[in-house]
Image (cartoon, rainbow, N blue to C red):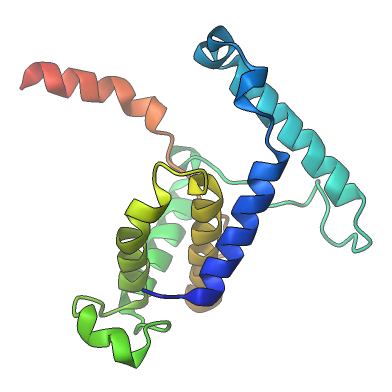
Length: 177
């Protein structure tokens, strides 16, 4: 789908992310392999975020009250149910962003949730394996979370799934085949 406003926002965010990232040449192959490079980038980002938030004139948003994402399996059962109910709610809402002149190109889009699926599929080759990957997905996830909250009554924060927690299961499954 062609959402020019969202695309412009993503391009801006991606440009800012690249401008603030340390160059890859700052890290050795050993630093990258061990995770030390990622930890340093993470620590730098955390420090910059704290500095940026503390410098704001609007102090209603602070580092201490920032939304914190939780790994899905660390959510309580009630939190999981609330999240999955909100996602189910999106599958019941009609499409909201699909321009009428494009509806015939995407006959499978029957709900707001379907719009997210189609957008992700359509932008996969333009976003995956690019420098924009993290910024685009951050913005995409933020919009999905806002729809869960604003249209479906979700009151939590968008969870994440830590694939590393189950990575050994893939090896096991492949050995069984």
